[in-house]
Image (cartoon, rainbow, N blue to C red; front, side, top):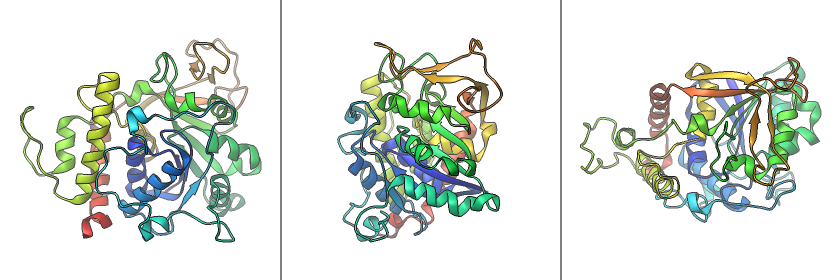
Length: 358
């Protein structure tokens, strides 16, 4: 069993990561924290709560809102890709005013304000690790790394309870929100460098890999109606067999339209963030190598670039921190097996989603 904490900024692809984190076999989701990123912090918090409810997560899994802005940089969002609220175009998700959705947001000890992300993560690690008598926790990050940087800075004594940090972000020689910078890292480069310097194993899932995880028309058909026959390219897709699958279809469709109009993706959208949970479920789905990775913090044209030392120019030791080869960088994905895993988790979710009880 893997015990994980998910830090995210939902976001269409973050929503798929939440679904997998709830329903992947042999994974125990301890909690979810949210940050600035794809949308403002209030929207990402609300979106995460809406998703946890829709995906039928156990009642004890709560949302802990975190950093509303980067450590140093100006705040940025991505409405061009995700719409103004972060989940543009999605149909069927209940509103944050729904009492069961609102109840997902953890309150502080006084019951007045939301409990903060770093304190929620600290409590989860403390209670799970039990000073070495329990289990390590894996931190999964699918948005800017601000919350994780704050956590390791405020609670350095709890870092020993962290098994590894798996994050979607960066690119090797490519970007998506500048010529060389990926959005999550570009939002808070300083936070990303702080996390890379932590003496804990890190796994980076960059654009080079996530751009191969394309949710094609054929996979969309299986998402809507698993038993339906293949359709011709110009034929309509089948109707969704459940309300949950209809909701997921609208999520995928909006994301597909954004990626086609912005980046020219014509086969479907890449569901970047879901790969983090897939890595935890089965690292053998990926090809990967260990490198030294740093973040460009001062470049006029390259701020936020993940600098992967593929030629070993920097002398490094065998540690995972400031002086070592600090990161495993994934380089390839078994796409077919990944989508088998994805669709299996959707099937599991379909059996418990409250959306299907209407």
